[in-house]
Length: 514
Figure 1 (cartoon, rainbow, N blue to C red):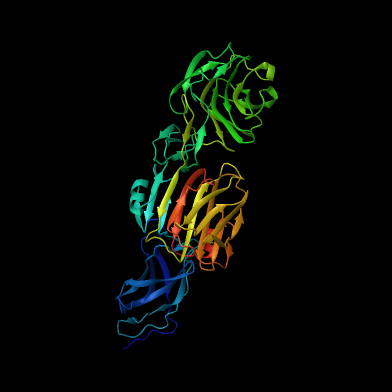
Figure 2: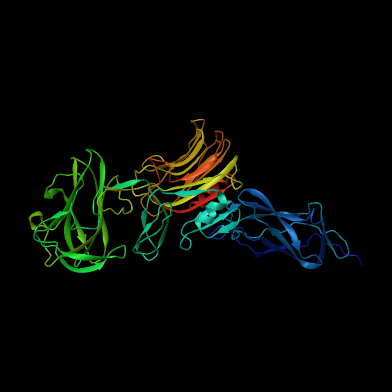
């Protein structure tokens, strides 16, 4: 007897396999869905006319095409993620099944009807497949992808993209064991918190000069001290793993060095100190007169800590001074011993990484990471996400990303005010769009995403609703620069970067930054 599928025939879609891009954002495998039917069916039309299920992926229409199961009661439909797909709140399936010129029949050749089904909950099927990604906290030297191909070190990734990393000097950073290391010129610095040992990402800084001489040789001129102290009592291990002495530091002792500075310039002093007991000492305010009231008290302990002070210079000499004199209100501890490491005086409103010196001042040059555009990039629409640590100062202006050409076309993800971030788009030097949003920049991680398309720009930060600008052409872009745009260089740790060759929806922009 010939059988026909009745109108009450039911389909149940069961998700049997789904995966989003991994932490490295490699090409995810197919996402499979199973259609369970009550008796065996045949499928025809493939490969040109495969039946399929429509899948909404972050506002973009994709398809899960029939891939297996003909002759059985279980059909598999497979969605193959495309580079650039992103849907962080789960894809959505659409009923009915689209035959797409193919057929689904029972074993007697009767067409399946109806093709509708109850749409299942697919909120757990999340897709994150950027065409280019850089994860700077994976392993010890990051993990990177280019159109689904994974690279386990930055050097090979830059070779594949034609990108460059440069810094025309040595630079310091903390390794995964919390030990201060010196990186060779043009060697990236994968930085760690020296206390928690948690990875902080790629260290990107602007150029800075340490004006202090003999930065870790505290009994060598031009260091000066009172005649009654600074004798060696014992030793300890310094932040860089070397052995340094504990010095006796009685209640008549100071240690200092003078540095010439211009008037009215932000100047930062820093030094690591470790004591044999917890007590309070004084640290002279930068660029101030040589008097006790211009000290700032600091509590030192039996662990190394970097103490820092910043001030605008009020005279042409800035004295880095450690004070334990009772005449200045200190010197309460009996038998105080202090160890010192890494003294630094630099121009700027925050301390940068340690710059070792001997008989002359030393400059650490700026870090620069640059990628030329390639097949991973779309000239007409795209989305860029930068994940970084909070800048050292809330008011510190910086560019998180400079997408530009050799001319005057560019798009900047830019911290433009004390709390404002914008996506500035310029064509031939003229601003065509500038959506902006705000953040407190009070510490921790910062995630910023900006998207572009003709007359459709968007920006979001730290889970905030996307702010849009619905006008403006798209500039011509030939390179992505991270960290090289003086003077508003990043000056922080870069955690990750992702690029999608689509203008992601406003919903996805917000989800990307959560």
